Length: 197
View 1: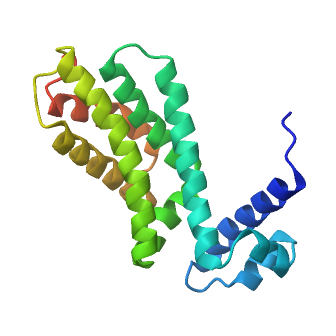
View 2: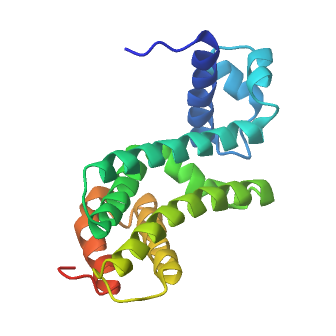
């Protein structure tokens, strides 16, 4: 078992409480006092770790991005070939969203009105994942697995599809997010002319 420092444990407790509060009240109606009360910490402890409510929210986004990156890296490590890796990265992304529904709801639905700081953070996270996908698509072009194409455009289209599937799931239009994985990956692989897609 990995032991966390008291500082890290307090920070994690604050973030867990913030997620609960934001999920229950929404970002705009939540106040730092709600997070303090739910976390069982003090106002000083919250402000020691985070200067304001927005910083708490952005830390939740960063933590989610780190989970997504770890999940994708673990899935990719087991694979050989660029297309297998990109398929695993997409699968890992959907599985990570499915395992973190409250956070997905906050990031994709609630937070869209949070302004330029949040939009910049969201773009940063999306760009990191896009670079991963595009890199493997570039490898697939280079090794002849797919015909030459604009991998940046393909990547953006794929991320748009991934986002829409998750948003539909959050709105109840898709019952089980993980059940969409085979159909979505098949459609996406076929969209780039992948053999066997």
